[in-house]
Image 1 (cartoon, rainbow, N blue to C red):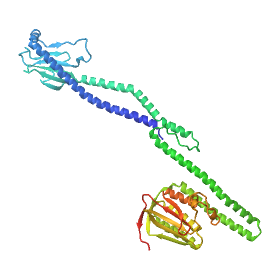
Image 2 (image 1 turned 45 degrees about the vertical axis):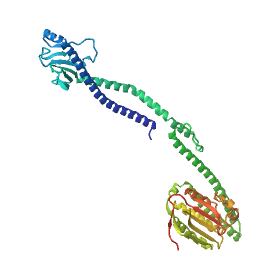
Image 3 (image 1 turned 90 degrees about the horizontal axis):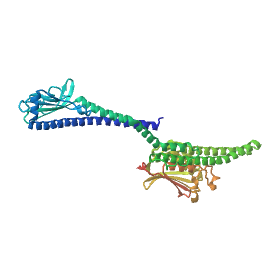
Length: 472
């Protein structure tokens, strides 16, 4: 068991933080590259500004006069009123020839620059280490190579700037994280409200209340679940209704033979006439046999209704199943002097549950034997109609009126004209119809060519095929 709310909160928060960390790292690397380019561009720009300024002073011959007066390296002082990043740049002016500047070597530098040239390079970027400190240097010389301007920046200044940016980003995340977590928690809580509403609906229901659930206030993602639950409720309600009807009908059907059994038992106990006693015992035996048959049919029907193993299907040879059941029931037909024919020219394979098909065939053939009078005929045909495998069982019995075709499939229904002549439970056709429905097959009742009843069972759908086999 686990909490869906906790799982969502943990997953959303952890994934969000992970994505932010990855994004922050990639942004930091990108920002580091871009700031390096910006700092380098600043060095170059500063060097060119100094170069232009120096060219102007040289043209006015004002700079050389300063060298003649001071005869020393000029150090430009730092202004007290300045920006905190103002000293992040250092510069130097180095004379390479005595001519124009009247000096040679380092003649001008900022107060944060060393007293010796920053780089030996005259043009371009260089990376140098002075007193253990890395420096980024941009050098620019004039056309005649009279002097070189070095503009430099310490690497720790750049790192400090990047560090401050990173700290600001992390602090913003830390400040916003509780608000972020609260927002995610509210979203998850609101999103899971329909589940709580559904749970409340189910918890308030009584065991006997199986009406469909409301789906108006539920999101689309829960609609399939609620739809499946509603279908389950419908099936359960139908199953309970069938069970109530079944129990009522079974109790009614068994009440009559039990009453007769008690009456005959009382007659047998009280009578002194041997013939009357034997007659009563004979009736008791018949009643027990009828009840046994009824209970057996009830158990079969109950097992079909509840056992999910009957839903599994496999490729079955319909011809072999028919021949097997015919061989089992043929002695009963022979005992009653009934001719039993099996006409088949092809083997048919159907996707079915073999155990159920055996019950179906046995019920139909046994029913035909029971209702066919002595000396009658029963013919079983296995054939194909419009590429659909089917078998027919027709007899020369009394048949069923066309108006009663639908009634015979009801539980415990028995024809008034034949009920007194043949022992039965009225469940045979109900069992057959249920098996046919499980296999998505069809069953039709017709008039037999022998004047009795013809039952036609047709199998359709994928997986049903035929195989030509010549029969003698």
